[in-house]
Image 1 (cartoon, one colour):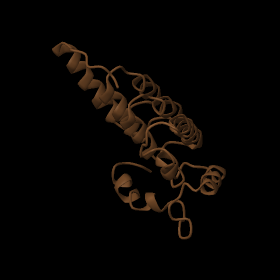
Image 2 (cartoon, rainbow, N blue to C red):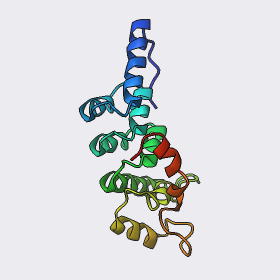
Image 3 (cartoon, helix red, strand yellow):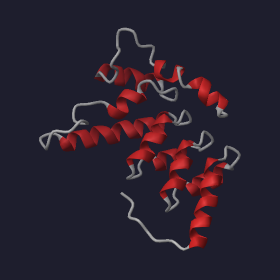
Image 4 (cartoon, rainbow, N blue to C red):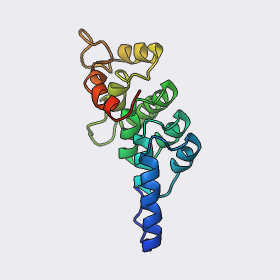
Length: 161
């Protein structure tokens, strides 16, 4: 978790300006790449939620220590197969390291993989791999995009093409 840091009023105002920049779909991709490594968590958070954020910046954000950032990357429809595959591998490693430790919700569960299998950016190969692994909770009726069908009207209203 990112430690708290006391900032001057001028620093806070600059942080607010960067948050506004990270939220704007018209922000250039190069600037979004810079904002993806900002020290202020809300700047990175809104960069992860921005539909215009390029996949390489999303890949960097998917490795952030903040769980909320990784969740926003997973829910961003701009995340491509490489980003999703990286998150799936990271979850597999974390789940393997927790086995034999204290019981936890994520051990044996498919938190990231259960959403990645339904993600519109996932390739057919990744979907097949995750379905074979049992990541989908609705294998008999699943069309692998059901989760996104309810979100797309709201995302289109927010500017997703």
